[in-house]
Image (spheres, rainbow, N blue to C red):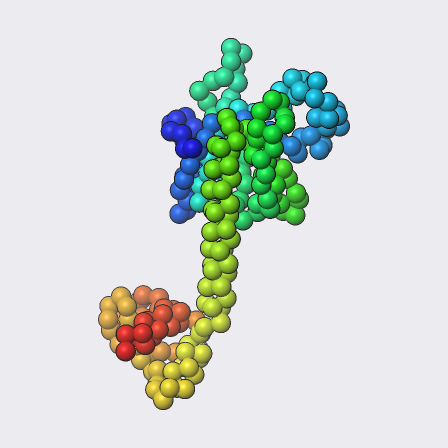
Length: 228
């Protein structure tokens, strides 16, 4: 399913931190938003005999699938035909995908329809493929990634909530429940013993200046408890 990505296409892809390309395929983008916003285009869609007149709404290029997004890189057209130049046309965050379907009747070919919501506005894009088996594999792969990405975001939000709740007063109270006292800790950077403050979510080591966070101590305490 994956195709080798030409350097000219790769240069147009702007990857985020911890983002990696998982698969890519040569495709034609059918921007269904144009159809909704253009009455003439919409009327042509209803007329099978006039399909050829809507070819100008198809954009050749590559669909690039990463662990975070769907990217469509459009091939630029010149006077004498397509050029070896590409630009990023559409970006769909995986967590925004609402649904996908394989549609069989449009411009004589198959397409994978992707519906998604961006800034509260629904959108729909179609990506043409060579055959149904190819699109079915692509659809399944994206569905798995959508589920995985949504889970990752939920976990990130959960960690953020935990970091907001956990401070040194919370840690001390929890440790005291077990009959212990948390008055000093060892700096993870220089190993010096430092006094743990009564409140706050972080402080700096008085010896090396390293920032020590309540969440870091919390994780270390959990690790110690597991090792007992």
